[in-house]
Amino acid sequence: MTTSAGMTSIRTSEGRIEIINQLLLPHTTEWVAVDTIEEAFDAIKSMKIRGAPAIASLAALTVSSHLSKALKDDPAPQFVLSPEALKSYIEPILNYLPTARPTAVNLGAAIRRLTKTLNNSISEKKDARTITQDLIAEGVAIDGEDVARNKQMSKWGGEWLVEEVKKRGGEGDRLNVMTVCNTGSLATSGYGTALGLITYLHETGRLETAFFTQSTPYHQGSRLTALELLTLKIPSVMLCDSMVGSLFQHKGISGIAVGADRIARNGDTANKVGTYNAAVLAARHNIPFIVVAPISTVDLDIEDGSQIPIEHRPPLEARLVRGALYPFKVDAQGVKEQATVMVTPEDLEGVYNPSFDVTPADLITAIVTEKGVAVKTEGSKVFDLSNIV
Ligand code: MRU
Image (cartoon, rainbow, N blue to C red; front, side, top):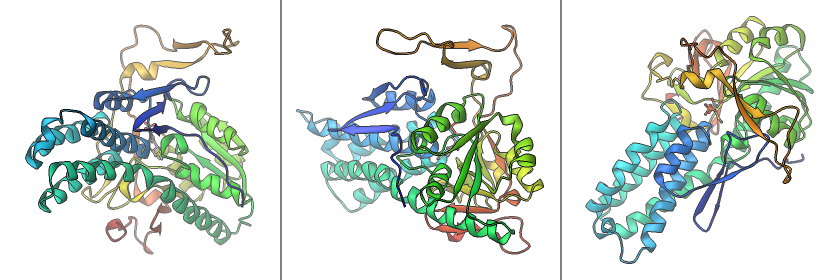
């Protein structure tokens, strides 16, 4: 098995955090420093960084780095004087960060973990400095755990898909897998979830071609997944979002693997808008439809998809396309000139722009987490995820 080196969305050095500005990819690689809580919030909200696990990692790392810097201050900040002072200082920060994007529950889950660490350390009667160090360690751990679990779920999901294809009468040796949005290294701390599954099949010699939708209006597919697949040298083909039905009719698709921003207890799954369309068509064509996501994406407090808050992005974002001017205009440093163009009439007012849709559990064949592969019991239209979390 060959392992491929992927891209990186976040890098840290001596407590300093930098992210790739995903708004400028694939033509310009710009690393942006994230030095404050506000900068992390803005980077997440403006989608300089995006993807449910990646934004959770950035939030957790930013809290860690913020507290590490404060601990080095001389004189020490007020909040390290007592656990109560620390609690009243840090809680508003922890409450603020998840409001940057409401659908991706991983962000809230990361913050809940930090809150739990805070409360546990307080109840263990630790001093404020030790509690601060516990929070710093927890933030770093949240980011650090992501890659290993991505590799684990990619393997579970890849092996499961091969067997499922065989069960349905296929060979299972050369699979065509379609995905939506971007779920690779740029959307996580590394390797990816659904794109991780595709990478795993490639590494083990069982992928024919990865197909991916453009995923308009933000173009996570055409800008980011395209770049990741090229970097990994994985054979790939892009399609416009409107071409999924045609693809399923003509290209012998073996499976669809998508990520998730929030999964309800019954398996209903919020993911990038367009995922539901693909799931309806997959059911029509009897193609296995797999959701690949860490346990932190499962929200047991939510019974079904109707309760998942769906983020609507600003209407303007759906009217604009951002990219490099073409034919390319390259400056002396070799940098391609970027442009944002409006593709609608200037006066257009009505725009429907949800960032996510919800795929009902009955259209999902399997949900893969780091704990394993969940399927529905015979005759049931929904999953019971309460026992896997
Ligand atoms: O709006 P985005 O780009 O943050 O949406 C991302 C997705 O919908 C991904 O599929 C999901 O977060 C899973 S990322 C591993």
